[in-house]
Length: 83
Length: 410
Image (tube, rainbow over all chains, first blue to last red; front, side, top):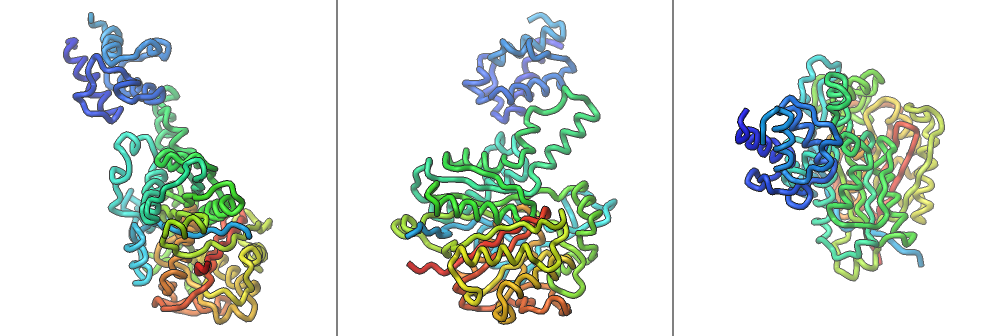
């Protein structure tokens, strides 16, 4: 899977899961400040990403993730795709 | 002079109508909200009818994200609360002095079941972090408070089929006793699900009548159980002086609340209606009214053999000779049994009877029963000048709640 495709799918999944318009879900967007996602929303969003990509993302690896871009990189890393 | 409490807003979300106008219009027209279950395929179930709220969209009442993160039981509650608040004229309030008392019998059961399926089929790490906040019975009260920013007393009283009445009663006491000036009080239920239909059917509590609109027939000889229903009812209760000062439209004074327990059996009513009698008498005493002042009783009237017989005995005992001349109707004949929402929606009915001077009928009342021998306002609504109306609610668990609504007279 290409990086661009991963980015597109992550953004689409997050937009749907967090009920925000797709154009707001950019790599720069911060979960809490820009997407109004609280800690429970993030857990739910990670579940959705795990489903979408067939990967496992342990809680401790999500801890430092504050932006959509960081989430994209984490998924890419799990898939063995260089960011 | 103790503080007095009035009803200044009503918000029904029911199988017969949403909003006061549609709801009341359906009731006085004697329209049933019961039909074949359409939200899921009921063909494997012993009972295939219910009173569902059709054409309800949570998007009309909350953001898509809020709708997704809450159970249908909260969707109904938010809609009812917003309707009631609008009906009250969206009064200016001190948010810290405004309470929310919102009950349910069962809570967010469909969310629990959906996540239980995920848990069993796919494991613990697939369970939604929103399962707990979606299933907990007090979620509705919490979400209503958030929707309005009300930080006064906030409670959820889960007393099954009496829950909505307890919410209204406790909200009334909080205002009268000075803990709040205004409250949104109500009940909500959204538990028409294959599992609950199966469970209630196993209790032999549900009607097996195949004809949906004729199945809920309270006090009729051929009644054979209640019809499950869903929805929410909310009322705005307000300290009387401030309601008058702002020129509120006052439906009625909430004059009394009586509560009791049967302490007899977890589901069957005490046959002589002793718990109900105690609650009716406590309510009248609270209102400072004699039994012969009662002009209407909105019955619990579930359409089960046991309830309708014991409730009739209770009314006769509590009202004495006055009972035979008192109109008693069960609007559950039309709405079905809204369980934890029933007491709240029926509180609204009792207040509307006082305000509108008209009594909705008990429909499907075709064959008198010798143990149910009161005036049940059969089949046709009736104009009546009612100064004092009672609303009875009795829950599985043996919990009883009776509310008294009086024509407002400063």
